[in-house]
Image 1: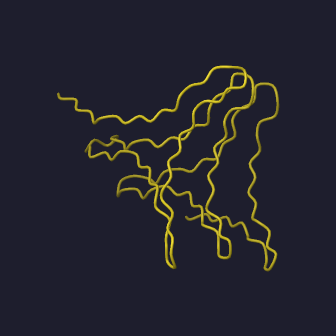
Image 2: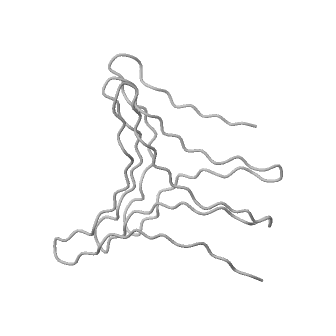
Image 3: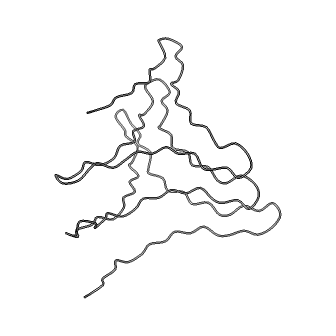
Length: 144
């Protein structure tokens, strides 16, 4: 049996020590698009592809984790679509991939973490307000 591994790429910001210090920042940004029909550049992050034929072969994991805190508040994760000065804002979509002919599609879970002494977090679904139209709606679909 041969075990072949692809190379790793790590981008790390520096640590910082001291009473009011901040760890280093990592920024990945695409270029701006200028001109009449300019489009901003794409930033794509992909987990690795699995070409394994075994039933439980798995594509690479894509994981975003906020930083831990010893006694303060752990780091948050924010995902936002882009704004527009005079047009529409971008959309935000969370979707699992299509399954094969013998599988099931992946689940979507929204879970607040457990609490060890206080209340656990809440889950809020809300549509934005509108100054010139009606607010959006929240729909529930059960495909059977």
